[in-house]
Image (cartoon, rainbow, N blue to C red; front, side, top):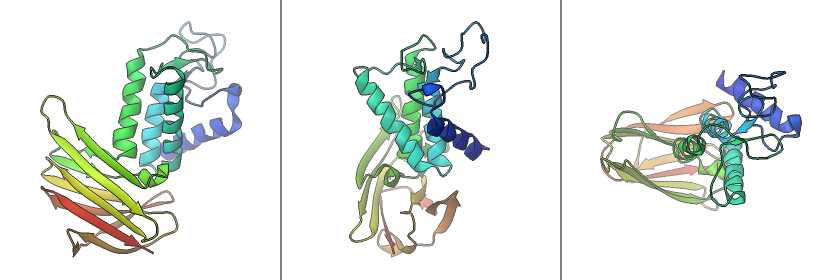
Length: 234
């Protein structure tokens, strides 16, 4: 169902419906003559909303449309720059800023897409006691990334450094933080297969997962502490 919804939004983008600058509609097609007193092309009635775009990006990352998720975030960054580093939530299809819900609602959805989608850090319990780390920087064309995420009140955190050496066909991941247990799910370059997986210089068992056309390797029940993961592919 999630993939079907994402595919529908991709089609709206490709068709450039309503000559819209983006496809993040809350309701489409717009309802005539109005919806909850909102005219067609405004707010949720055929308007374009970053809160929709943020949730769409996160879902795209998690359901096999990783490059589409990265594309949405790139457009969000461009939109943020256009508006002087202050990102409005609601637009008319022509890109005019519209009235709507508070801007920080949309900004929160985008941050969630960045953290849980692109960076791939998902708290599976509370205070990062059990964490899934699924870096998807390959979909954004990034060879290196450093991630540090913390809860403001408790200070509990998760951090990692990602590196992709194309010439050596190696993906490296260094993790640290307050988790008692980690699950790592690493996206593998398209068309490649895994040659070896080492955790702290020891070969470890792993599972392969296919999400749509995307391939991941998964290592579960990694204990607390700092760890080094190295994946070689061919």
